[in-house]
Image (cartoon, rainbow, N blue to C red; front, side):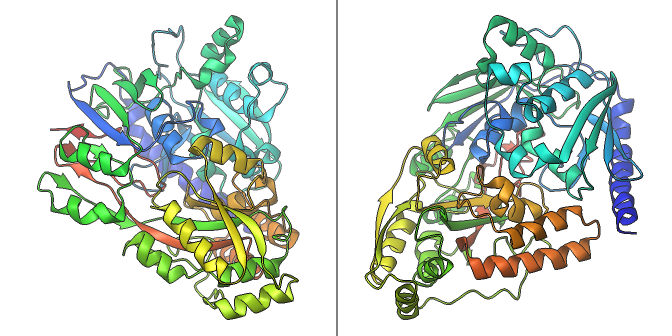
Length: 543
């Protein structure tokens, strides 16, 4: 009965996808007339690269995933609903253990200065993309050995047992078990489809690593050049398979780490869209007659992670004491400046299955000191506290937050040394487990609870986005059970049980959910706030 409900739900999604795709599949894909317009985006940082499967941050995904690439299924602009992408439709087997994707015909890979395709997109590209992530001995993977954190964080390396080409426009995925969020997960950034022909060219030239510097996809924009810490340039793709959705001929990322400088550039029309305004700049931007300032509640969470592989942070009492010592209200007032809400769970309140009855301990330095003494540390301890070097919607000022936490902990005898690195180095070292505690956060990727509980806290994710490296079997068993359970009401009950365990163990301290603002010039047409944390420029025009 459970499986039957899942199959009905998945087939409903599939049939909706077929209907949505009908107009595109019926249309003849031809050269689109792209308006001769330029849009400049003031981004906050340099991407680590252009190979989407390797990365986990919005900075990377905005610069590669939603410019150069497509996926088999995709999220609608401005939402979390899945719609057809490079697959026109998909079927689920009666037992739920395989999904067959029917690919779109007539899709062209981009022609660039470094690659000229000789064929259109087909099943070989899908098989290559996923086989590279599945098989460490795949030739391209051996030539360019990298990690795929999202793919492994979600356990897809264990879930997908086979990816096979049925015919040139049909690909079948065989699964080890029924997986409720599978289609949602396939719309995520790591699943961007690469060109197998381009990969073969790089392999033969001995330049496999170039796939991360010179990207080729089927997406709305063609990569032209990248100068680290300065600019990324794209041209509109005249061969894009979605007619009339490319509305700018030039897209330029002006990499501008200083948020104050981003504001000035936007006000001077040196860029028309900017990333991550500081709370202190919101009123100024709202007052500018040439700018719009749309906003919405953020699908995000800023938190303090505890590395449980470092003693004494493996002790839940120590973690609870550190949490109780943090004055979160003061942080929300000072860091978020009215644009944040206190967090009480490992996911935002807008996520279905959120447990609104979850109660964490209140701020109480006296009780925190007592708990630390009971845990065996009457004289406190020395630990490191890592502060992000970048601004994010979930944490607009990590330096200030770290200083406030440092002062709070000092009151209970905990001596915290604040540490920071350049963003790429920060993430790399955190993956390696060098931190004791670290400020980090998350913006939901696909609208499914598994994306919070599994990706941030599951055992499969301890070398990826589970920065605390917390692997707790009673919790992990529930997360896996939730993935395999078709009925949403039953999944909700399972995930709420998992949240109760999380609250008892507290592998990270939730701080806040923020309001997301998107400053944009009034010249810009149809820019949407993406709830999943990146920016997209397909469908965006300039007056």
